[in-house]
Length: 147
Figure 1: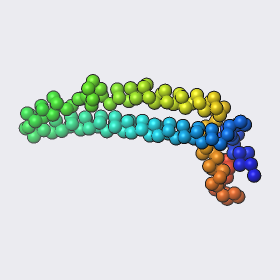
Figure 2 (figure 1 turned 60 degrees about the vertical axis):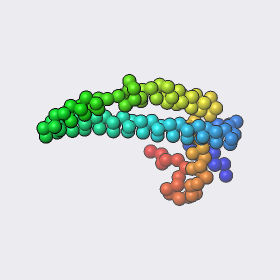
Figure 3 (figure 1 turned 90 degrees about the horizontal axis):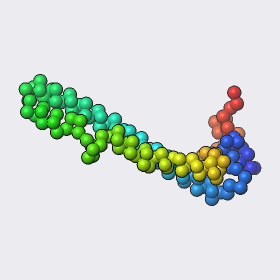
Figure 4 (figure 1 turned 135 degrees about the vertical axis):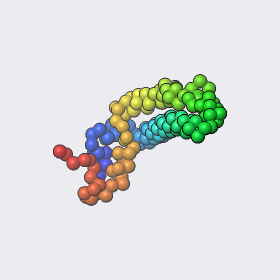
């Protein structure tokens, strides 16, 4: 059985692309996916840090309401709106990560997939799907049902 022909055309391995190349493209894709996850953690860090800063503002207000002006002033002066690393708020860290690392990485991955596999993504995963699915099982079809 030719498992490649069971896949939709967008995921069939192009002629001339060997198994080592499919595995290499899969590793490259996995590395990019890991970078996507790291980037998501940066956005989580950004949102959590921003939330903490607004919560500090609330704490300053409550300290003042409790008559603790000196402590409120110290927190407000030292922490509210503070850079998380010298000269940077979290959005600037994300911007630097995106321009310095993420976008070049994504562009390189896209270029290589286009050059080597005719732009076909997830060839390794599609290959795994054909190997791991149960033939004739209704929930293990090779492709989505046609509309």
